[in-house]
Structure formats: structure tokens, C-alpha cells
Length: 125
Image (cartoon, rainbow, N blue to C red; front, side):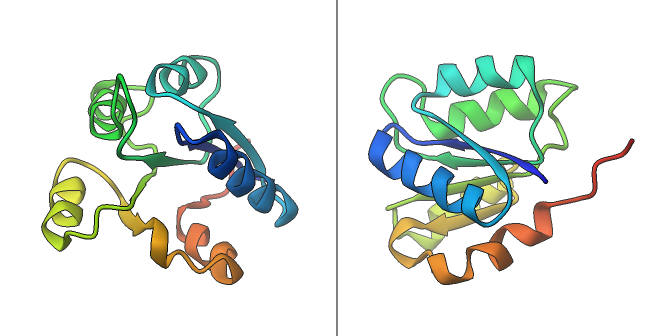
């Protein structure tokens, strides 16, 4: 079982995605702010972070920046997801350290297992 941290300020969307990932066999946890995401990462490093871009207070790009400068999380896979349908923004996000950029409107939930699979490296015992 892999751990996934889902970060989205829309609690319903966040919880729905976390529940779906849990049904697929992962241990998914939802938090609703950038600060809570960083607090969670201080306690436990998941296998993957799925991070909303547009959030009040600390947005996803700032959370990503902080993840990338922290030695414990510098290599942590982070997928940004957003409703921003600008290919230039997706490129910018990947240049800033995102492993991938998913458009919320184009996530195929029937194919979610395949979307997260590349980031699920085996846990080292």
C-alpha cells in the first residue's frame, strides 16, 4: 500500500479523490491548505503528493517550492492539478519541479490507477 497526500482547498473534491484512491488500494489522505500539506509532510513523507495549484493563502506553486528546497522532500513526486488550461502554465510548473500537471477537467478517474502508477516506487525496508 502506498501513501498519497491530496491537497485541495475544495474539501468535497479533495475527499472524493482521496476516497477513490483508497478504494484503489492506496492510503490517501486529504488536507485542504498549503500550510496543512507542509505540516503533514513534517510528520510523514508519502509516496506522492497531488497538489491543487489555486488555493487561498499559500498556493500550490509555493507549496511545491518549499517541498523542493527541503532535503527530506526534494525528490518527492508531486503532481500539480488545476483548472488552468494553459499549456504554458503546465510547462512552467514542470520547470519549477512538478513531476506532472493534470487538468482537473481532463482527469480520467476510470484510469486513475494508471495515472499514479509511475510515481509509486516500492517502499524501501
